[in-house]
Length: 626
Image (cartoon, helix red, strand yellow):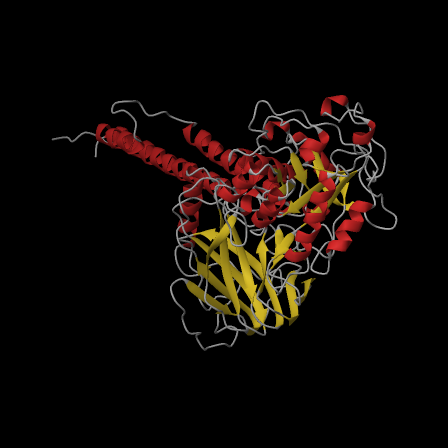
C-alpha cells in the first residue's frame, strides 16, 4: 500500500471529506478530554439528584403552578393555632348580611340543612325538602359522581333545579390535613371547576371529616369559594347554640352534626327550638337518609326525618324560622373559577414504595398510601415493622375481624402521589410479601373528572412464611386525559400480613427469573434446588428461603445472565426520548457518549501511528537498481 492509498482509506474511515489533509498532532487529546469531561458531568449530575429523589420532597408552593392567568394572589398565612371561636373581622366586600331588617326578621333564626358526601339517597332527601317548601345544601365530591351508591350528574343538576344549593366537598373526600398545600388546592379547585362545568353554581364548601388546617382555609379562599363549613362548634355542652350572623369566620362556620340511626324527630326539633327567637344561623349536618330496615350508623331514618321536616315546614309558615341555603344566608356571590395546579408526581413510579416514610400521624398510613375497605366490625392493626425485605421498614397488618376485604393502596389524588401513566400502555405491579393467608393485587385508574374506578386485579397468590415476590400486568390503559394509576394489595381473610417494595413499571419490563432472589444469588447457592411451578404469563411469583441483609437485597435486579447493559441503556435512552427522562438515564447516556469518545480517541491515535510508520518506511525505501 503506497502513502496516497493509505491516506485516502484513513480519511474514509474517519468520515472526513476525501482529500482533506490529516492533522499531525493534538486531535486525540482533544477528543479524549471531551469524553472524560462528559462522563464527569454525567456523574456529577446524577449523584445529588438521586439523593434528592430518595427524600421525595413536597411540591413547592408557587403561583406559577396555576393554569389560569386570573388566579388570585395567595393571602399570607394567618396565625397558627387560631380556634374557631376566636373573633375575626368580616370585610364588607364578602357580602355579609346587613342589619337593616325589621325587628321580627332580625329575631328569626336561619336554618340550613346540609347533606355531605353526595350519596344516592340525597335525591330523595332533596325531594322531601322541596315538597315542603324547604331548601338545603348538598355538598358533593366531583370524583364520585356516577359511582356506585352516589348521585349521578343528572341527579345533582336536578337538585339545583329544585331550588337547592350544590356545594364542593373536594374531589376525593380526602383528609386535607394529611395533604400538602398544593394537593389541597388541587382537590378544592379541581372539584369546583368540575362541578361548575356541569352548570352548577358553586360558592359554598364543606371540609371532609371536618379536618382542616390554616393551609386548608387559605386554599378554600384562593379557589374562589365564599364560605366553608365544619361539622362542630354547635350542640355540645361547651359549644354555642348556633353560628353568629355574620359568622365569626366565613371559612370555618360552625354546625351541629352527629345525627344517625338513633336520632329521633324530637332530637332535631329540640335543636331548632333552642335558637327560636334569636338572630342565629343554625346549620344541621346529615350524611345519609335511610329508607331500609338496616341503617348505617350515620344514616337518619326516613320516618323520623320526615316528621322533623313536617314540623319545620309548619314553623316556617308561621315565620318562626327561615329555611334557606348557605349562599342565601350569607348573601354570597358566585366568584370566578380558579384552575387547579398541575400534577408533579413522577411518571409511572410509586413514591415511598418501601414504606420508609411515615404518615402525618401515628394512626395514618405511610406517606403516599392509604387504607381502605374497613367498615363497622373490622379489626385491623396496621403498623410499620422493622422486619423488612429491603431497607429499614415494611408494612404489616394483623386482622382479627374482617366483614369484607381490606386493602392498602397508593394514594388516589390529583398529582402529588398518584403516578401519571400513558394511554395505550400496560403496567406491571409487583410486591414482596409474607402472609398466613393468600393476597391479591389490584389497580384503579383515574377518570377525566377525577374519580378512580377499578382497573382489574390478579388472582390470589399463595400464602408464604418467607418473603415471596408476586407480580401482575394490567390491561392497556384507556385513552383519556388526566390518567393516573393507583395500585393496591388486598387482604381477604383473618391473619397476619407483611408487604414491602411495592412496584409499578411500564411493560414490557426486564423479566424477573422465578428463582432470582437478590443480587448475586441463585437457588443452588441457597440450597434450594427445587424450581417453583410457573404461573400464567401475566402473574409470576418468587419465593425466598432466607432473607439477605438489607445492603445486599435488591428485589428488582434481573438475573445475571443476558445482555443487561445494552437493555438498560436502550430502556434509559427510550424513556429520555419519550419525554420521561430520569437521572439514571441521563447518567447512562452521558457515560455511553464518554465511552464513544474514548474509543474514537484510541482508534485515532492508533491510526496516526500506522500512518507515521508507513510514511517513514516509504521514504526510507531505496529504488530498484533495475
